Image (cartoon, rainbow, N blue to C red; front, top):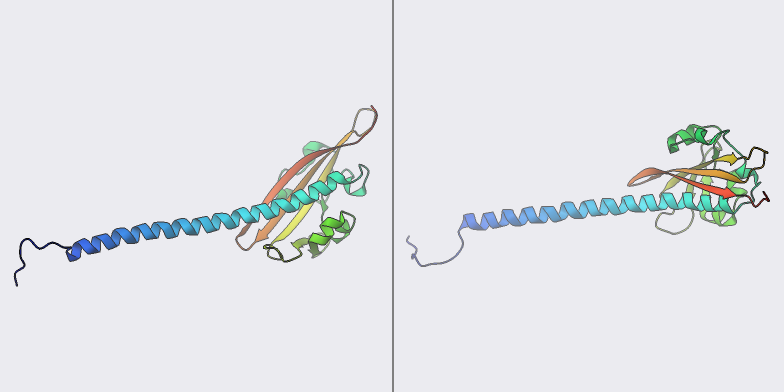
Length: 185
């Protein structure tokens, strides 16, 4: 069978090459979408975990200067743990557990639930939000009194540590702030 020389169209090889090029393009889009979903879940996890730490940090900032939750935990600022893992292993660091949560702001007690032993408590969120119950948190804090030579304490360094786990992974965060006392110098 002979085909006319002026007949136009695609050969089978040209069609297969076009399909391969299209498949490679679609594969690239699928990989890009998968990474975007993963990055979005990771960002959500970090935002949730950091939000817990910020809530605790702001609550500690609002407490009276001499509140028992703000008593000094370490004798020198350079003795404060530098990582969340070190803080969770440090016996001097205070943990957010059922006892300490009860002494804090009602806002925290309405948002978070504590379970597990006092020495190693786990925090989960209450409610119907996207992260309700799906993330677990461990929160701790350390305090150092910045004392003057005369013994007065005009400020405290507060460092909050948090460790969280979620379905798409977990993370750690450390936040440090200074709380000032209103004293006459």
